[in-house]
Image (tube, rainbow, N blue to C red; front, side, top):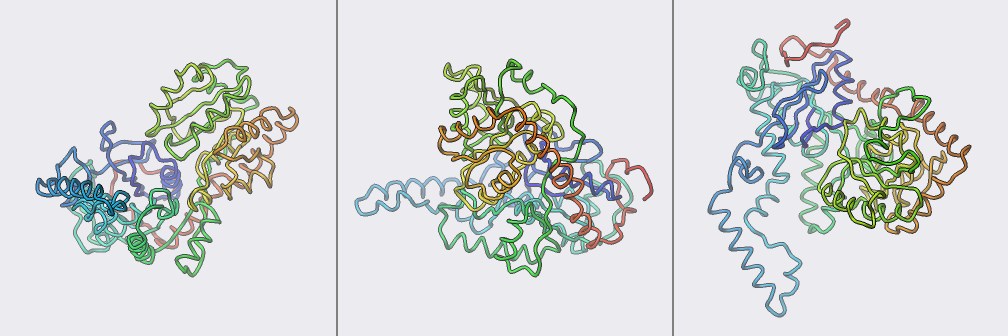
Length: 471
């Protein structure tokens, strides 16, 4: 499993890894490093390795381990200063909106995605060859293609087996199957980060992406809408397998746990509107807090991590929000549905500014469903909106308008008890019968078995006890 993030933890990778392990595979998750995390860890029986960038590009993506060459750094500074001066000359105003082509930026385009390529070089130093590489996202696919070529015998991996991370066992054979599954988490080139990119550069990236896609042995994605879009834009012979990232099924307790109220320090009578996931821009966090502040006996609780964590913590102490706005650190993905069950609504106020957002079905949606909690979603989130409306699971609102968000939240929070109970039962039944991991993972397991019919488990020992039962 290849994931271009620190796996701290990453729910989709863990669920796939556990399901493959239960089928008799030996599984390893490889991610990126983070200063506060060890380079090696265990999550249950699943081993996690976090690899540092390596090779000539490493100095440009990990300053802590290597500084950029002095000449390149000096050139960046000089050209950047020249660009700022030119933009002040009358008639050259458009330069203010342009990105000065410094050597570092040019390198970033020529070697795109540069961080992924440096990370792939690091992975090639520490990972043994594998029969199957499951790449979560485009950056992981770059690494997977390189590792797969090595596994098929283009380069010896004996040194990796005998080297770092305690990978034990006799020397690996020169060749493994080296098959690649591309797990398309989102349409990254349709995200907000690429919205203002020059068309020529975006087309270049699109061609590189298509080349990687055609080299992959199988494609999976997160919902039918995204699968249809991928088939159209890549001219695929068949639609990708759909594997929604739903939590596993667990029978709900008769009384929802109150762990969320206790952690937030809120009275049991306070109604909680919950946000789950990454705390950052373009997620409607500020508008959500304003909306909840307009509803009596309600509080907005953000449970997650990300660049806005401290900003939201500061808002907790703002006199306007004290007791009505609480920010909590993330919990393990396995625990999220239990925490969410203590909420009165899960709010997904993401704006539909990009196709990527409009077709998204993030973890928080399925976690709220698994908890049996009403859902309030942004009006332009097409896939989630349809599920909510067809099954009457909550309400829809304009995520940019705190008044409209408050209106939708009141519809959910002030609904009669019998309607709230019916929504809970419908959500739990949908989770049990359709949207649970045990059902969703089946196409992926079938694909893995087709790509590598007889996984060869005799050559590697990842330092993890194999699953019990017949091999």
